[in-house]
Amino acid sequence: MSRERLYLFDTTLRDGAQTTGVDFKVADKQRIASVLDDLGVDYVEGGYPGANQTDTEFFAAKPDFRVAKFTAFGMTKRPGRSVENDPGFQGLMQSKAEAICLVAKSWDYHVRVALGISNEENIEGIRQSIEAVVASGREAMLDAEHFFDGYKANPDYAHQVAKTAYEAGARWVVLCDTNGGTLPHELDRIVREIGEVVPGSNLGIHTHNDTENAVANTLVAVRAGCRQIQGTLNGLGERCGNANLTSIIPTLLLKGEFAEQFQTGVTPERLRTLTHASRVLDEVVNRSPYRHAPYVGESAFATKAGIHASAILKDPDTYEHVAPELVGNSRRVLVSDQGGRSNILSSLSRLGLNVDKDDARIPGLLEAVKQREAAGYSYESADASFELLARRELDEVPKYFSVDSFRVMVERRHNARGELVTVSEATVKVFINGDKEPLWSVSEGNGPVNALDSALRKDLGRYQRHIADVDLVDYKVRILTAGGGTEAVTRVLVESHDRGTGDRWLTVGVSPNIIDASFEALVDSINYKLMKDGAKACVHAA
Image 1 (cartoon, rainbow, N blue to C red):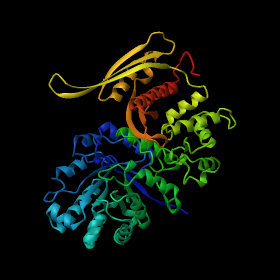
Image 2: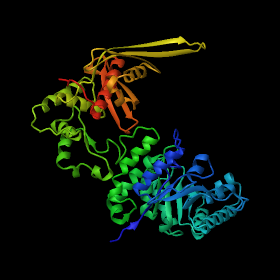
Image 3: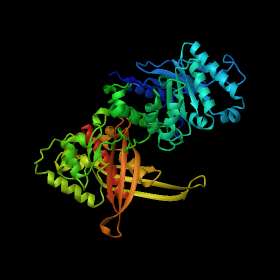
Image 4: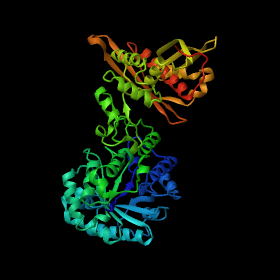
C-alpha cells in the first residue's frame, strides 16, 4: 500500500527568533538552515525580508539546498495599496525565496479592530496577494492567523478566507492556532469541517504550545486531513513555544498508523541526524540541551533502576518505545545507588571500557559508587565524574597535576568612582606532575567560584593548550541533609563546554563547604578534558 505524502515546514528561523533571549545572526540562520535541509524538511522559512537587516541579507542569496524550498514570510498587501505600490509586499517579491507564505486575518473581529477595514476588503486583499505570488512563478501559501478563534466566532467568514486563498491559487492554506488555546477535540472538528471547503492535500496546520497541546494538536490535524505540518526545532517560539518538530517527525515516521499511512521527506537515514540537529540549535542559541526532551534528550532513553537495567540490556524492545539509534540518540543505563552490576557494566561499555562481567574490580567500583552516593554524590548526570571514578578504580587515569592549596577572598568596598562593589579574588597553587616548581595563578571573578575557575584555568603549563577553549557554562547547587541529621552537605554540578569541539560534560563535587564542592567539580572537569584529549603525564595515579 502506497503511503500518502506529508510536507514538513520549519519556522525556526522566524517563529524561533521570537523566543525571549534568541537573536539569530545571518551566520546562525545559514547554519540552522543547512541542518534542516540535511534533515529533509520540505520548507525552510527564513524570516521576513525587508523587516530587518538580518532577514534582508539572508534572503539576498538563495541557500544551496538539496531538499528544502527557501521560503519567505510576510503580510498580504496593505489596505488601500496595490501589490505594486506596497513596499513590504515588494520586498517579498524581490527576495530569492522560492515560496512565499503570506499571513492574513481570518477572524472578523481582528479585521474590524486591528486592520480597520471591511470583511470584503480583507478578502480582496488576500485574493490579490495570492494571485500576485502565483503570477511571479513562486509557490504561494496563506497563514490564516487566529483561524480557530475566528472559526468559533464566525465560521462562515473563516470558511470564506480559506476558500478565497485556495481559489486564488494558494498551494497551502495553513490553519493557525496563533494563541495556542485550541484543544484537540475542537481542532479535530474544525479541520474536518474546513476540509469540505479546501482539500486536505492543500491544508496545513500551525500550532502554538500555550496549553501543552501543540504536538497533540498537530497529530490530530494530520488525522483530520492536514497534509502540511509547521513547527520548529525543539519547539522554539514565543511565549510557550511552537509545535516541536523534534517530537513530531519521529512520531510520524515510527509510530503506528502514522508510519503505516504517511511518509515525509525525512528518510530513515536522515532521521538519525535528528538529535544532532536538536543539539546544533541549542548550541547556536547558547542553551543547555533539555535532558528530558522526548526522542532527543539525554535522558530520553535512560534508566537507573537495577531490575530495569538488566531487562533493557537483554530485551530493549519491550522497555523502550523506539530504538534510540533511530533518532541518533543512545541508551544510557545510569549509575546510582539503585543500580547494580548491570548498570555498572552498561555504563562502562558506553564509555568504551569493555570489562568482563566477572572482573574482580567491578564489586569494588559498585561499592565505591554506593558509598559516594550515600555521602551526597550523584552520577546520574555527571558522566564525566563517573568516568574518572571508574577509570581510577581500574587504574587508568594519569595524574596530570595536583593542587597544593587555594585561597578565595571576597571583599566589599568602594571603587575609585565611589561605587559599592563586591570583588572576588582567587589564588591557586598547582604542581604539574613531574615538575618541581609550583605554578601560582591569581584571578578575579564575578563571584568566588568564577574567580576559582578563572585562576585554575589560567595557567596549567604544558597542559594549557588542552583547556584554552573550555568554559564553565552552567553551575547548580543543591543543599542536602545527610544521614537524617542537621548537618548540611552541598552538592555542586558543573557543566563545561569546549568551544573548539562543541562537547559538553558535567562533573560533580560534594562537601559541607560550597567552595570545596565547587572546586572538586572544577578539578574533575579539567582532568576529564585532559584525559579525553589523551594528554601525556609522567606518572599514573594509583
